[in-house]
Image (cartoon, rainbow, N blue to C red; front, side):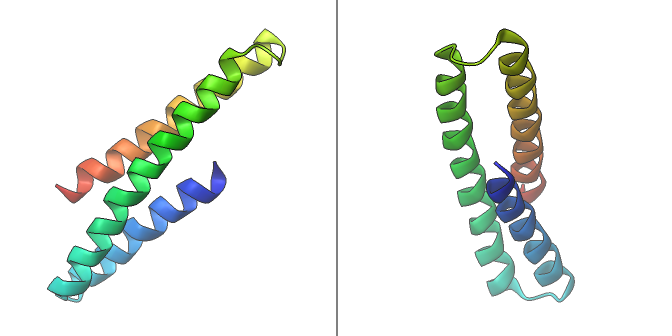
Length: 84
């Protein structure tokens, strides 16, 4: 989860730097990485939610992890929205 979020935020940072430098080609490439990272984060979230739904962890742990995953997904969505 940390790896996916770091990749997403790194892509957002690259897009901002390229935009400030008025480098259109690099800005477009970084925005494409933001989109790709957000998609990967969504796939990862769904996989984790499926695993959590199996119920191998105590309910309180599942609840905390599901809440964390939803919050990370919101951050990923905001990053995607920021590119528009």
